[in-house]
Length: 447
Image (cartoon, rainbow, N blue to C red):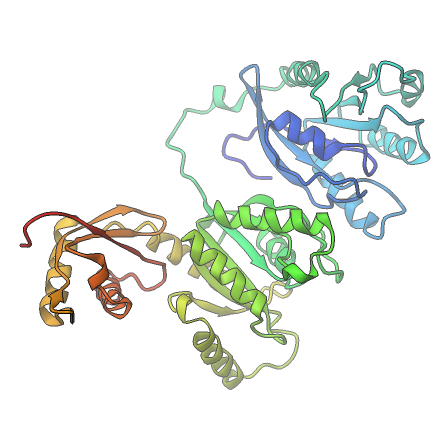
């Protein structure tokens, strides 16, 4: 994990369903990871910042270690990599249950890796639990907590901070400078479109669990990366499925996380499968991005699956443009996350979109352009009345948002509003990002 302040990392590990995600949500004081009774919900590393007693650190939630899970080898690799970068490990067990062979197996793994460990006995809501079994692990004094109710978590945070006190603070050694926020990019698409493979390619490491099983990623995972000279916060999301195919609470939660990821992103990268093309579900994702007002780049992934010819790319490009008229501004890139084909080009387009969603239109120039547009093509009259624009101003960015104060918004047909939009896009070079135009009624004498 790359972070500007080089915060120490605290990894949360343990077998499935001992409450690691609940503990992370409690310590981070907001819901970061999915919480579900089904064992093995979390398979990838999930990061969240945490501050306690003026000490900041990064929590990382990991997949449950178990040799019975079909993904156990990938999960073990994720856990080992999380522990390798961790300053401290929280080893979580279920306080209500006797220790299992899996718990002891994880404990042996902890001792072999040699990192500082705090033993956490979770789900200790009852006073009648038998605590003696936990000491058998030989990992020191356990901390009895209830992540669900918050019991003991303050003491646990105290212990975490005490362990971290021996580490030098990065912000004490490095002069403070202006913080430049990385561009937040949500990687979205249907299950098994190759989202995690793309993130791994951008990272240059095996960070996300990759499998042929659709829906392997169920959380929204944030990771910072530098690609082609740009700095991005990638949000790898669970694959969005059609509502008719959501037959479990877990899928509903995953869909909610994907929507939240889109809502907090600056740009969304929609991945399509080259051999499947555009589906109704992909159109729905485009609408989600459009409703959120964020930038959009469409990536046709797995372009290496067979010998795709240039004319086939031209045909698919034309078909996508015809099927997505509302996203006419979105760049389309043919790529392969597996081989790296055109991945740099994809992020170059993301960077260009990121610049344009921050576009600022000077008020004087904006009003001149509107006046010229009205002069060259006057609005049609409606029942003897004609639209008059009294004033225009930009009220927001990400995306650019222009408000037109008019005599009557009902006099502006959608086609004329599209004409004004196209004129502004041409005048300000806004070719790759969404543009919002709002008409408001204002009393006043037309100019």
